Length: 140
Image (cartoon, rainbow, N blue to C red; front, side, top):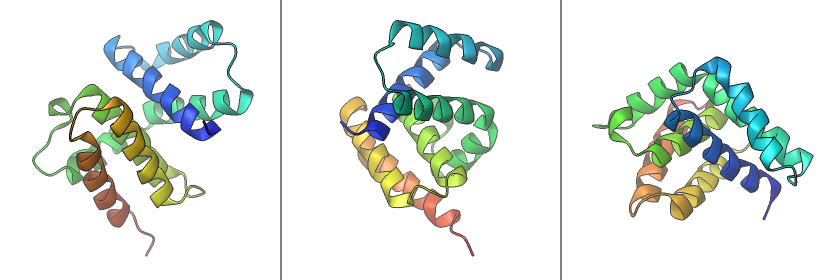
């Protein structure tokens, strides 16, 4: 498995855990520390990208959630499943803040996560939302 795909899977696991625990922003570092203590075998590149995604999604949660809500027509964040919501958050972070990753790569990776971890129609829903976010955030 490619390193970035593995990092995205781990980031999804961590964001899900953080949300389920209703962890505060100041608890994120402790959760990351515990996670890596229990999973020491991961490569440094995987760990670094995972940490970056988790920290930056949590740090930018309000603008990310605002963008998703604005774009996911007739859907609120609370109505989305935990997995779908966190896949969207990760991918929206990449689309909004990581110009070094091609948008279509981000969208494809999110679709693959949705196929693997989401419910039946998750990948189609995520694909539609992310394409609208991509279009809305195109450089002019």
